[in-house]
Amino acid sequence: KNEVEQSPQNLTAQEGEFITINCSYSVGISALHWLQQHPGGGIVSLFMLSSGKKKHGRLIATINIQEKHSSLHITASHPRDSAVYICAVGFYGQNFVFGPGTRLSVLP
Amino acid sequence: KAGVTQTPRYLIKTRGQQVTLSCSPISGHRSVSWYQQTPGQGLQFLFEYFSETQRNKGNFPGRFSGRQFSNSRSEMNVSTLELGDSALYLCASREQLYNEQFFGPGTRLTVL
Image (cartoon, rainbow over the protein chains, first blue to last red):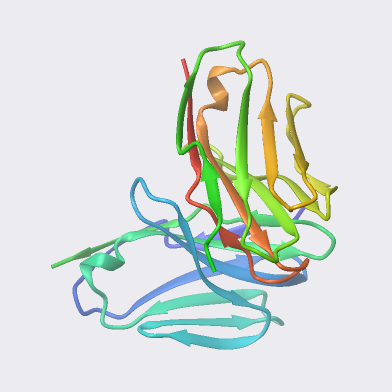
């Protein structure tokens, strides 16, 4: 069965802290997305990864294909980063399977 | 380019009714996928259409159906609504299969 796990489930941080959210999956994949959803809001795709590392502003995403693991890092966190972060994995020949999400609260 | 649009944004229906949701992909995108998000089950894949053909289907009952038109716009239909169908329905489009998906804002359906 294709499963996607995320950790932690919930995370509270102080403004300015470095944050890491992890995603692990069970079998080989074609691509992995990190998604962001603000309370009551829609979903925004932050990154799509199939290998290596990507950076947008204060956000960095990495993926290790051999270890079946990806991380989302937020540097210098800000209250506006408070949201649910979801890992979505595309398995070969199938559509996306989503992780349960990590709820992040950044306190001022 | 305009982003993915979904209409309506909010909808209230009663049990037993049917509903049709619409998704307009980004111009040039040929794939449209539909997802359901509920507090209990999280995000789950419904189906994907590519060039008017259903390519993949998730594990949902036959009450959930969809179609895609020649201009790549897609509709999703749910018949005989149940309380458990209350959810945020998201669509996402991509240019080709295995490209990055871009999500629409969603349609929030409430079934009373």
